[in-house]
Image (tube, rainbow, N blue to C red; front, side):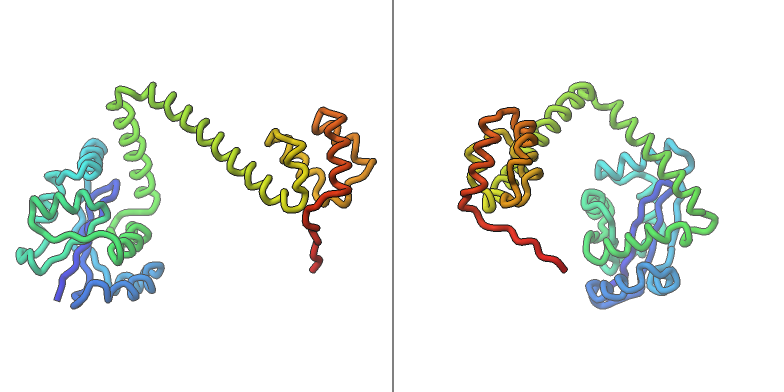
Length: 261
């Protein structure tokens, strides 16, 4: 039999939870998935063993930094050594972060597991956490998360000496990505609309103009002299507008039939 415990890190403190004993951890997955949204059913398979609250926001920040860096903080070490069974070989500890799991296994000797059923259990704990811990409300838990999130983010920006350069680098990367996306989408428009009106590709080279024309023309069979003025406005070239109109009348493209329900 395997005794599964789960470690949950929250802005207000560490929580250690235990699940009923099973021969194979994977057998728990269907049960957890079924009851994760129902507090009553979730209580039947998960129980709170211990809760270690942080004494201050500064202590919470220290522990958050330690977990993110894969370091076992003294508060976490004390919790695990105090409440986990002494027979380490029969205990399996579920954690959300593989880095902190590896650190716990190396320093304290407890086998750790992530993903699979552990992720589903943590999802349920995250959802019902304010009901599992006595005296904790949903509002106070949210406030603690918000405060720790701001402190953690400020600390990360403060310690980054290249933060000004990073903003420039990120802006350039964003522009490059946008340019790639625009080119990709434009090629898709040319490819798909080209089945219907292939001659338009040879007449119009600019991607933005091509997309506007594809949207305006729609079914090439409906293009006539009345729309010539709008074509000239979009292409800013009378000769090209006339060429588009002529090409639409003798196009070799496929017909697009609209289906009405």
